[in-house]
Amino acid sequence: MTFREYADQAWDIPDKYYANRYYLSAHGCGITGEYPYLYHRGDFKDAGYDGTIEPGMVLCVESYIAEEGGSQGVKLEQQILVTETGIELLSRFPFEEALLK
Image (cartoon, rainbow, N blue to C red):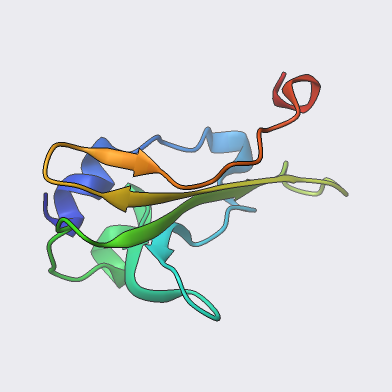
């Protein structure tokens, strides 16, 4: 899958949260955000670049959103391993269900 295909298929942030989004929908794992940087569909034209998601890559799929002018937001992140047949979830700590509603 190309970086562009990923951006086109990824979850779209609702308009009321878009201004306060995290600028990436996924990135490589490391000390900080590492290659590849996978941008949201709305940011791809200005910031995205060519590349391919390949088996063996470990990615952090994440989101941060908050209402514009709001004082709080939500950040969720999962680490995945890309395999020949899909993905393997590497994160082992569950989300708090009450906070997902």
